[in-house]
Length: 251
Image 1 (cartoon, rainbow, N blue to C red):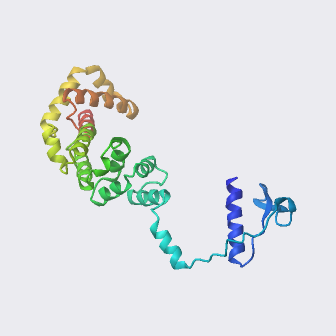
Image 2: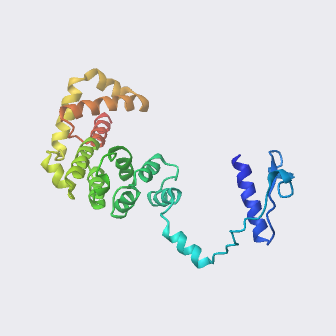
Image 3: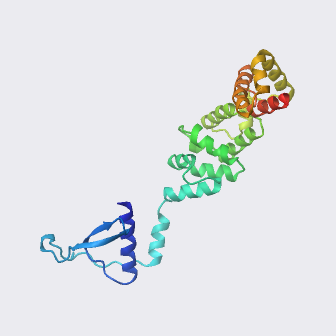
């Protein structure tokens, strides 16, 4: 059905462009040939009772009028998805892009990226953490700054989610201040290393399997150790830093 509609639309446009008249008729779609064929005319059949509408005159709007009408319309969702996808460097069919447009948060995402926000983190927050009332009032600069804190290791993903919720609720603009007020200060390297050492000492069997295992085994056990460190630090540790420390100790 879709292919038939597309074919007929193009066929009729071509006829009009060539100055020809479109004849009202029933047409058949030939799947093998990928085209339509005439079955019967409707214009001469008495049972259809066709006659010209006397109150409708030909309308030929000029290009300026068409452009003005088009400019007055809101951007179509497909165009909005394409614009955001291009800016974020992802495919237009991305789920995060679709969610951003559906929630009318694509302008926020675009502005946050333009303000220096990490593209992937901006889309992640839009898709997973901003399905709340008032999300559209969030300052793009605040979202951008939040993603930079994450990338720089100042906040874990869990902490960033909590800070984001507070930013939306309070309409705050400085995620660093909000994080500090919530007690989400980054652990220094020495303190983190000590916690990692304690967790390893508490799980010698798992550590031995980690050291002796291949990449797949290490990947699974790394998640275990990161989880234990997160539990011990009440979510203050940076998971990437923990993983890096494990690899360093195992080498």
